[in-house]
Length: 245
Image (cartoon, rainbow, N blue to C red):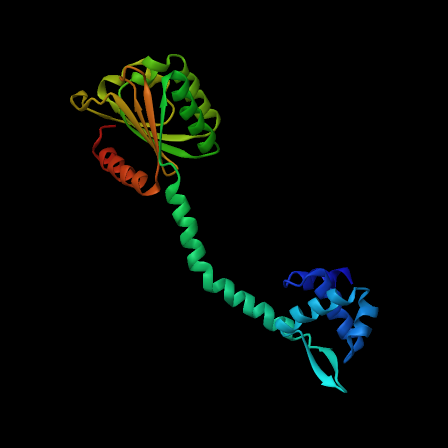
C-alpha cells in the first residue's frame, strides 16, 4: 500500500487526497458518509479532498434522491495526468534553460589575485583542476615565473609530472639555456627574444590566467569564459605552428 500511496503523492495528490481516492476505488459509487468511515478523515477534510480530486478528473459525483453519490475515475486517468504534466514541463523547458543561462552570465567572469599568495592560489587551482591528464597551454614565458615565485617553480613542475598534467609552452629564446627550462615538464617551442613578453598567458579548461609578473605587486587576472578562452587557444596554436623547436 505504501508503494501505491507514494506513487499517487508523486502526481501531486495530498495525503488526504490519496486516502479519499483509494476509498472511492474500494467502495465504488458511494456517499460521503461511507468515505468518511473508510478513510478515517473528518467530514470537512473529505469534502476538500473530493473537490481536488474532481478538479483533477479523478472523481465525479451525481445526485440521487437529492444526495451526492461519488465515484472514482478509471485509474487510466492517472496516465493522462502524467502525460499532461510531461507536456507542461516540456513547454517550459526553453524558458527554464534561458533562466539558467542568464544566471551563468551573471557569474563573475574576471577575478584579480595579487601577491605571491594570490598567485599560488591560482597556480594551485590549475594543478587541482588538471590533475589526471589535463593540459594547459602558455605563451609569453620569459622566466619571470621562477624569478618571482622562487623555488615554487620547481615544486610546481614536479607536481605537474606527478599529477600527469600536460603542457605546451612558448618560451622566450633566452630561456632555452637556463635552469628554468631544464626543470620544465612538458613540450616547448621558442620565439626570438625580440618578441619578449613580461607576462604568462595560460589557457586551460575554459579559463585564461594572465600572470603580470613585472607589476609592482605581482598580479594574475583569472578570466572564466569559454568563448574567450577558445579565442586565445586559436592564437596560441597559430604561434605554436610558427615557433622554433
